[in-house]
Image 1 (spheres, helix red, strand yellow):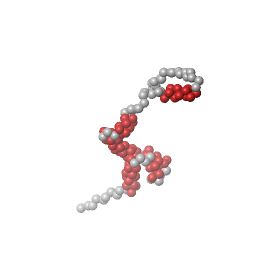
Image 2 (tube, rainbow, N blue to C red; image 1 turned 120 degrees about the horizontal axis):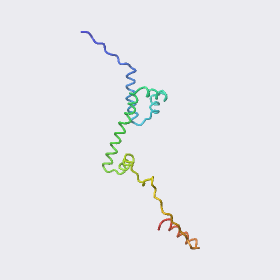
Image 3 (cartoon, rainbow, N blue to C red; image 1 turned 90 degrees about the vertical axis):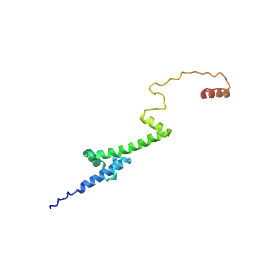
Image 4 (cartoon, rainbow, N blue to C red; image 1 turned 120 degrees about the vertical axis):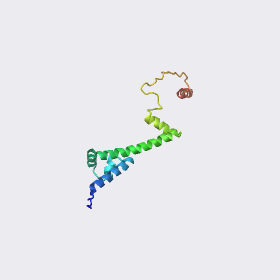
Length: 136
């Protein structure tokens, strides 16, 4: 019986695989491309070229971020459903384009009001001015 020769796995391919796995995990933990380059001790220009040439590396970086974003988004929605008001507001502001302000395209104009203080007593004038300013 003839023995089949085992294919030798190249060290380069193993290293590339480990790098892809690390990129996936590290990008998911929030590392930028620049930080990944520093981590792997590669110049940023070189690392950017590697990313441009290697769709697997691009996919690993994007996938790492996407997986963690999906996980965090799920936790946020869960908290909102449990009644966490901060989570509800954050979700509505970021995903629902909700705002606490009135429509900014059509600002409401306040009517112009003029006041005249007819007293000559500075203390009385100050008191009247404070009432006008505070609306009381």
